[in-house]
Length: 575
Image (cartoon, rainbow, N blue to C red; front, side, top):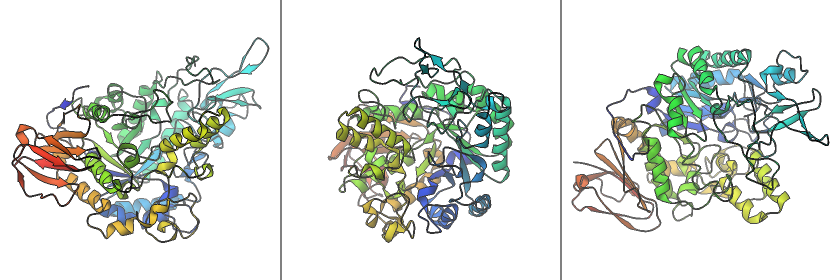
């Protein structure tokens, strides 16, 4: 799985393999009723825009009823809709409008945990004898020699603090990997699993076309809950190994056999801390689990070595290329891959992987677009990526950052008094809010997102970076995305299903690879002019796509030295 050359015979085709999936963050996409919050009817009003872009599937981040502690990833009713977004009837209307356009709907399935306001949890915490007590994970306290109450172990939650919360009524702790208001479900309980499957069928029978499965690799736990090694002596709580639970594959296979296999749908799982070898155990067709998973190696590059998993340290292009090549090898092993560069949990890709300065922002966006659309797998595009949205300015005051995770991290830094300003700015760079700002539709007030003050501040650059302006410009990033997505569909045998070979793995500036043995992609990830020596088989080749339009697409190259400007990319094909 570490080889940089990937060859294989032809592989089977499926609609979900060649599909272009577009993630919508419902609160921030389009507001139809002027309350400052995006909604389902706002999405419906923008479907023609998405169809014209080349989108086949829209993935909605959670729309279910929720107190919104974690922007919908705390569900209080799986079969109802968060009222500000709309109703179940609105979702049915959305499905009808999508299917009329030959488009599909992917819902976010959040079943590792619920909200503490879910009726299941209300019943579970009512008493130790409740029929639903075992639908969640409860444990008694530990006590020190002096009688001090302690949680079952020292694990640190993803949002800070302990993973255990004390319940005063029943005098036990419940487990929550995330916020205390997001108790983890107990997948060991077959009745609870059956209730989850019933809910999934509810939406699939309405016409839903698949699920993105939130933290699906964590639904099984090591129920012995051993203490984690102390790696941060200053903290009471320690990071614990995010390894798979012992029954995770059993649970997902049961989900597949009882529900997923009965429908022609797309399934993709969020699987952090997984190697390609581990991923194959989820996505290989013989496993009967899910079709593909979101890997994290590329978005985690530069994290965790010195300053923790929320602060990015310098990284080198050869590292990035090696990661991409490693995951492209899933093709050769019989698996499938989910291609993404940003989403609602990640910073904007131009800021993260290229150069978001005004001079190079558009060039960087086109460079990353060419990378994204020429790799093996299913393309996942995040709202605003197609118009080059970048990270929030780091000088925004803390109260403008809405995410519970960011607020908790900054609060912890402030409490410790550790390089507060410097560390805060570094945390902001990786913060989840970067990918959650309202969509920039036009240069009108509130960026055309809403007729009133949006729920979250919109970056000031919306007057020059918006859909309306880019739709009028044939050389815009939006126009380039449309062209590249259409090209990918026309050339799917090569770009979706073809072989992959990484070239010049140690080059610090150039990312070059061959698809399908006859298309060469060369990308300059630097701010300088560079020359790249073409492989001999491409010494006489034709430029078929370029990020700079002034390149002559029809001309044959007769020189093995290819000159590239800063953040420029080209695709070449053998004559």
